[in-house]
Length: 151
Image (cartoon, rainbow, N blue to C red; front, top):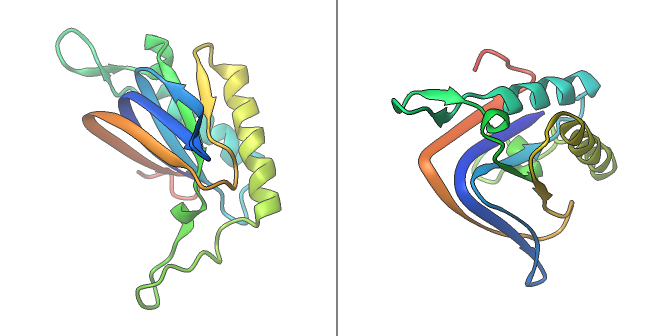
C-alpha cells in the first residue's frame, strides 16, 4: 500500500461537478493498493499516518499529529501511485491491485481509520473521475509505502 500525504489548509473533491467530500485543515491522503497487499499493510498505514508528527508546535517544530490537533482527513483512492516507468514513458499499472480488490481494500482502510480517528473524515468516490482542490500548507508532503518501511 502506498500513500501520498499532503498537509493542507483545506481540500475538497468533486465528482460530476458535485462536491462529495471536503475538509478544513488537516491531511489530504491519496492511497493506492498493490496486488499483494494484506490487512497488515492497511493497519500499518493507518497507524503511521495518524501518528505522523507534521504539524508545528509554538516553536515551529513538527511535534503534532493530525490526531493530536483533531484536524480533518480527506482520503482519495489513486491507483496511479503504483505506476511504473521502467519501460518507456507510458506508466504501467500492472502492480496495482485489481479494481475489485482495491475497492475492498479502500473501504476497509476507511473503516480502520474511522475506528482509530475521532476527527472529521471525508472521502472521494472509488473508481470515479474526481477533481480535487486543495490549499497546501508548508508545503509538507510525505510518501509512505508499506512494502518499504524505511522512508
